Structures are given as C-alpha cells and as structure tokens.
Length: 220
Ligand SMILES: N[C@@H](CCC(=O)N[C@@H](CS)C(=O)NCC(=O)O)C(=O)O
Image 1: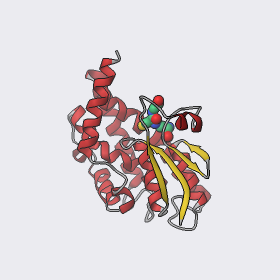
Image 2: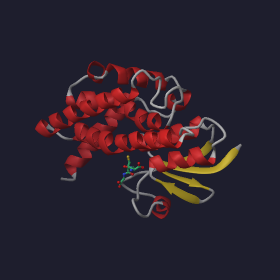
Image 3: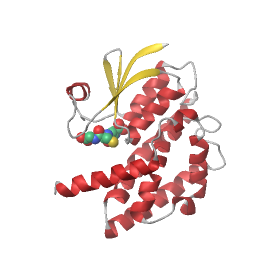
C-alpha cells in the first residue's frame, strides 16, 4: 500500500541511508527528494527549521527529523512487520545505547579520518579502530547487533560500510585487517536487499569525498 511518505535525502549521506534501510525493511513506498545542501530547498528549511539538515521524513505532511528518531518512528508506526527494536524494555534500552554510541563516536571520528590530515588524522584513525573493536566486542558471536534480528544498531552503523573505501584510502589503512569481525558483519548485512539497495557505490562515495574536500579548501 502506498503511504503518504516523502524523504528529503542526499544519496551519499549515511544518515539518509539509515532511513532508506528502515523504509525498505518495512516494505514501504515513498517519494525521495534529493537535496542540494549548498542550496537547500524551501521545503527542507520549512520541515527542519531547527537543524536544516537531511534526512527528514514527511509523513502525511508532518516532518520527523534526526535519522535515529526517524528510524524508531518508522518502527513504531509500522510495527506489524520486521521489528527493528526488541520488545523487552531492557534490550530496547541497550539497543538505543549502542545506536547512540555509534552516533556520538563513530560518525564524528570517521569525519575526521576523511577530512583531517597529519597527526589529527592519525589520532582519529586510532580512535576509530578502538571504537570498531569495542563494537566487535558488543557484536560477539551474534549474527547482527540485534541478535538473530537485524535491528536498530545494525541500521545505525551499516551505512558507514559504503564509506569504508573512502576512510581506508584517506588514511591508508585496512579495516578488514584491523577489524575482521566487523567487516564479516557488514558483509552479512549487505546480503539483505534493504541494505544493498540503500547503500551507494563505494567508489562514487570516494569521488564525492574528493569533491567535498575541494569545496572545503576553496571556502577557506
Ligand atoms: N544527527 C543528524 C545528522 C544529519 C546530517 O549531518 N546531515 C547532513 C548531511 S550528511 C546535512 O544535512 N548537512 C547540512 C548542514 O548541516 O547544513 C541525523 O542523524 O539525522
């Protein structure tokens, strides 16, 4: 059934990818609108006046902002299939804790690995590997962070897989060598159609990063 859903998105955004994955897990149809972040649409400014960022999910004309909040909203509204959060309150809190960890630690550090240089980049790389190893500990022998079920933490983290090549090439290291269990997990996730169709090509992402770096240099 077609729902009244519009997603304000940007193809290379890992935050947008989270929402695409959640919508695909639920089998929901939606209209995707690609934003130009250097010239934001009036719809984006109206729908997310606080942060002015994508992604925004507009459901029946009402905006929901912040990717992890959007993913949880989707899970609550379309709760009848493919639950992304566990039913047990303690396990749910635990999933939210790790999704929050991914947000606070992994994405900001990854940004530095991609954009910084010299010692700052080396330090960020070290930190990122430590964070990945900690996540490997949390994953343990499970199939997904959500156990047998692909869940919130998986949705939060897997978009970064499309940035692995950009990370590795920017800072000259191999994530598979440092964190083989994390890469094995990512390869399991990418077998899901919801993930494979939501993540862009890693080389396109790297080209996007090179363009972004050029723009940042020009603006300084
Ligand atoms: N915490 C936000 C982060 C979203 C975010 O950083 N979006 C970026 C694109 S990847 C954006 O819209 N940037 C434009 C800006 O900050 O002006 C979320 O999880 O949705």
